Image (cartoon, rainbow, N blue to C red; front, side, top):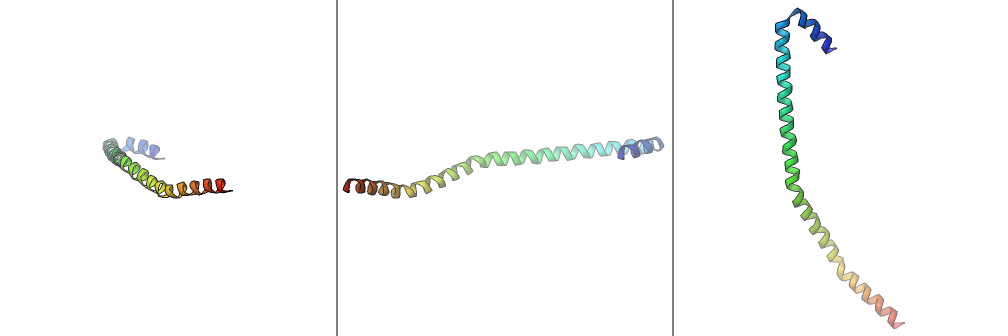
Length: 86
C-alpha cells in the first residue's frame, strides 16, 4: 500500500517525494547504525561477563560438592566397617 501511495504522490509531487525518500532512507540508516551499535555493546558485555560468571558458577559448584565430600567419605568408611563387622 505504501508503495502505491509513494508512486502516486511521486508523480504529482516529485521534489517532495524525493526529499521524503531521502529522509526516510537516512532515518533507516541511522536506526540501523544505532541498532548495530547497541547489539555490539550487548555482545561485548556478555562476552566480558561470561568468564566471570563461569568462574563464579564453578566456584559455587565446587564449594557445594566439597561440602558434601566429608559425608561421602564417612559414609563409605561406615559402610566398609559394617561389611567387615558382619
